[in-house]
Length: 517
Image (cartoon, rainbow, N blue to C red; front, side):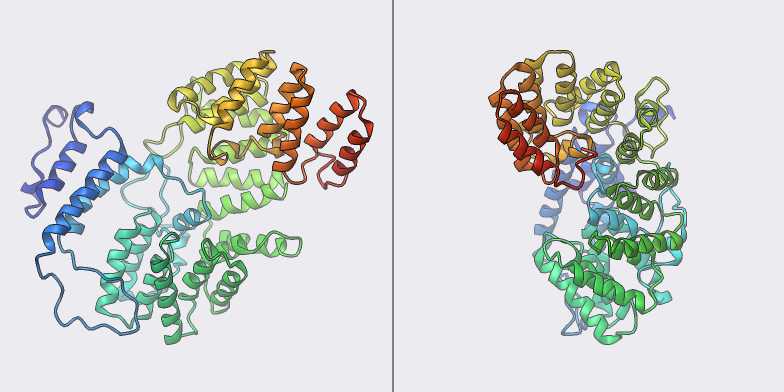
């Protein structure tokens, strides 16, 4: 043990003779004993890896590494690529370390990210053990592969689920090049390629390969899934067509929970569609009862439809299946809206309090976002001491972040320091991406909005004109929220402008949520 602690790691090329020196240096630096000698951020290591790959590729451009007599089906779409026999092995070890360093910075909040994780063959346990734990999703795979390709498809799906799209594409394309007419490999390549939402050429290649597989056999369900996914999200965003292809996969016998989950996500919220969405979420859970993602998605569906008790049950089960700190945010929001504030605070106290019970994956630690969300919950349950402490920690971890500044503005307003409250709200206003602080608490569902809160502070300062202008901005920035209309009406009435006050109130009374607001 002392040897491993005190001595540098042995040269890697003793075990991997063909490992390039440049890659070995990256790994050795990442494993350095002294913190000062290691990479100071995941971004720095990523840049070093990309530079090493570029240099290795340049060195290979003078070599003829293209396989001879490779038979290709003319219409099968493959990326233009060189065979790189060393790069995947050489960079694999380094990328593994990079993935560990990056793990804490990745998020699956977007619909695409949510489904990437949903299609991982193994569901990780709370401690991320080395051997993946099989779940029900293993028996309901998206690609019903022939035995020859089952392992390869499982490997590619794991890579996609972990966000390693380029590595997944390398494996999938190599297999397809060897057998370009195979249905399973066409569908697999299509699935990988349609993940590249920002790379239109690859996105279109995925669509083409899915269509080629369907031309081969339109009775099988697998290729309809990537075709539906192609239409589902930006930049295509044709959800009705996505629903059509997901439905075709289901009608052809797909028993993959992910297809039902995707169709539920693609259906627009409406009184007519909501029973269908709920049924699809339920079917996805039946097919994969140990998968946390259908539970999370159905919880979001219930939350958005104000069924907070149902949302709480799904969020709690999702955390039981796979604990993650980010899941606390939405569960805490549901607790607050369901009049269970102490349960909301308990979530954050169990992680940030003196007990420090962190039942999450190994290495996951609270960040500026987590402290900021906890600070809002503490403020909402009238614990200003915790709110002040946690918002200060959030600010120290990420200076001038909008979440911490917003909570500090609310605390300053409550204590009568209106000048400081306005200063902190201006810090929030400078944040270029409001979504970074607005979800799930700092939005009209919780009677919060930047311009409206600015108007409230200005009104307390006696600046009625400034407050009326701020509420006007809040009205323009929101849709169907009664609060700024009512509060602006009160200011108009106070200074004798009854017609303007009545106009505001009449408008507010047309909103469906006016009683709650």
